[in-house]
Length: 635
Ligand code: 6R9
Image (cartoon, rainbow, N blue to C red; front, side, top):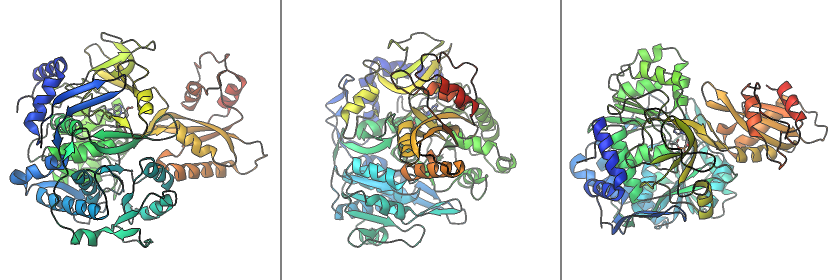
């Protein structure tokens, strides 16, 4: 068990040094000791960031579900793998043991096979946070199919784009989903999306809400009867280390979403090892991550990381405000949660509520608190620390990305002293670098720059599905021989990192990454709109909210401005989903542009955040006069 569980700061530094001096020896030892392989690797790592190409554990064979399920059956068969906490607290929670998980995953795997799904095929999964979601992705992994989960809050347009981008032939969905006191017609969204997706041959439907839906003959079928009839064992497909495990889409600076491809062995090793250390997980702890499996956090730290460690992981279907703002604390008390991992936006929303919601619950089971998705501000950090952790549970502020697969910069609880707003130190094996605008590394402490990673780690995404050039251009071109994260960061006097935010055209709203381009494209489709630009501005719950500047066509448009605003937001909801709606929409006659025609977002950002004292030099703009007009009418 050497090096697997880090227990004090000196050990962290020791293991860290070892991991960067000889990464191959380090990761080989972790891989040897803690996982089940059908065949060992010939080479631990080969890489070249200029191509870019990264391969870990080449030549090895395995199936990740044997590591996440089968190997626990002898020692932990009766242990609860997944606790399902339904949206409605009156509905009973489900405890799914490792035995039961094995049975359910195998049945689902057999159903997929019967529907013709083979190794390497892409399976789209559009499900709410119900056990079938975890079971379906594990079933894909069982048979070597590549899952592509689409967050069930995305619109039919966004779903269709993702289905077509990766050529999925089958989709698993449900009749509807429960969110607080609402129920959402998921199947209706799927039906609409599929009008644009000729490649989909089969739709498997989970019955969750019992709402009336249409079932298209020869295409749609209810899942449960198939599961009941299926055999409860399924021989795992033996996969190569670098076979793709899944595709997960993330927003970029340009219109099309990027289908990040993660492969099998490295992803497994890194998510399992980080899970164990970042949450200091011990046998019999109950771990709860509130993310949705539609995001990377759910993939790595609800499903794969915890299950690879034989942990008990909670899946929560609901929302923090239903039936009231005490729900999170109820769930912690009810299931005696030891590690709780959530997002700053949720913390800020809960911190606004009456303190009684937290104070009246028994939260004494908690040992570790986590934060992820965006920078956590000082106020939220202290509220979390004082009221949830009672100053006894360390907060791990974990920085990472869809592209990195696992946690990259983070404290290790009870090991790394924490400082509010600092993600602190690189995790074992991670070699960050800060770069200046000229593309050179800034050495030493008390410096600020663009955050890059110098050396590959096992769970780095290997490509963008179908577009390796875009992968190279987005991540490996700005800083030679480095992976560029898109974030800015500073390193303080003791070497702690603080993430300062995105330096590209991605805005993080309530922890969701949103690219400006797809939202602007959606707005511009409105018949009255000529052009638009959106920027983020500070929001006390969402972190950032969206501010849109919209130029209308000169058609003598006389419609009520508020109606137009609603229509524009409706347009965004249809194209992307309600998460991308604008909080403020200002109609303008022009947008500040450089002489080369690039919108000066820096100026628009300042106006949106009501900070117009220092706009910098605007005289070089193509149309400086428009700036005064925008300031005068700002919302
Ligand atoms: C895991 C996840 C990635 C972007 C990332 C950064 C921001 C995530 C953060 C954080 C500051 C943290 N981010 N964690 N910023 N502190 N602890 O969120 O992946 O959805 O791909 O977002 O989120 O800007 O680049 P993803």
